Length: 605
Image (cartoon, rainbow, N blue to C red):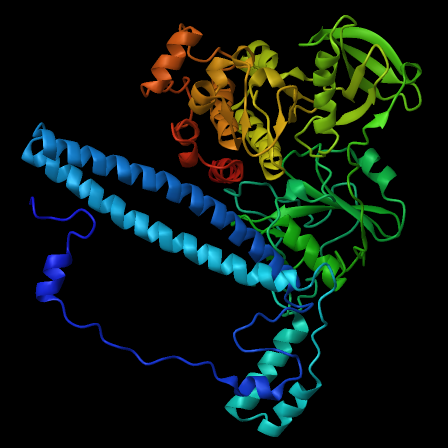
């Protein structure tokens, strides 16, 4: 065993027993296709034109991300390998280790060496892919790509004939180019029976008696919509990130937004939470309930699609009637209003009652004079320094950029003394007090939905590079229909990595180990906090790590302690909590994965 080499332990065996590597023939690109086109396509070069540009841009982002991720993994793996080699050397030189311990360490070094080489190959591949695509994109230099045109292609097809292999290949090639390149593999929609009327007893979402139409609308579902075979589904985007999705707004608010024929939006039904409604203006305002079948797919009439986005995109792209009776077409998506962040003055606002106390001052209930809208007004004490004042306004600067159904909306800012941040009024109050005061009224389905709401909001922040740093039940608010929204962005930072210099700001029991030990925050740190938020939700507002102080909590977490599940917590939920509490940030799930897992639990439950 002493003769085994660290770097290549199998070399002696290969030398003595190996056979020469069989040489395979070279594979060459058939350049005949290039001679029958006029599209300037070159061998060994990417074809950059109006059909490929968007896909190449998307690929380039993924390749760039892979380069950075593999580089970081490579650095960590290299450090682990060097440390393991050093430990092995010390064991051998000092004779402290037993034969078995040396053997185990040797195996670990060998495994790390192999993993290091594999990771190095993966990194080099990502770099190569990124260089190829980015070089092609750089040639555009901000200009527009060439439009794909090939007048010779059809003539070439005719010259080869339609019955020959080459002719059929060219026909398919031309057909695909006319359709455009699909960013995702086409999914064949699920077809319902034409006489479908009811729903299965075990369906997770009840279907309306009259498919496709809201209860107050007169439209019937009498036949299937058109289904062009060449439809390619769009790139997956969470429904909450679609700007035409407005969350849970009322019919009255919806109808005020739909002004012209063809205007449309999607919302969640207030009377039937969990049901999505397509609202459109076409010979009046119409509200169509989007049905979801037992397999989780969505439909209006006819075919079913894997997401609401795909369903809406199909009807918009092909201008198919939503229902044949209504003949309604989707033409103009009505986008939800972004946080305006408008500048206000004190005369715009009527201050009414005190709601509570914040870090910088009181939080008041108020009303806007011009609209009568009830709002929450965060105030800043008069005697604070300019640094503290800027810190107070930082929350507004962050919220100004975001608009999401599960993020508290910014209304505006008063930047004259006294400084105000004006936000939407969340009449349900803070989530922690609600859990503590109404715990006996909260059903398991509601607890799960609160988790989904929080994951939706955090996935949106993660996507936009915002680290919250203080995610907890106390910093979540409920609106009048008990939708949970993320609030209190006073500690948030818009960066992939943030190093904190003031440990006094850190809420220890909600904070990830790397943030406590190295004052480094990432979205993975927010994931740890989300696990604690889930624990708060299922414990109905108990303080985490009951009976333990901050110092003891920190020490025990570093030693591997994790809180047991609150009484009655489903196993799948506790498993998710534990995944959020993985010690290494890279081992924790991302928020989009958390959201998907919670939705799956809801679907199966």
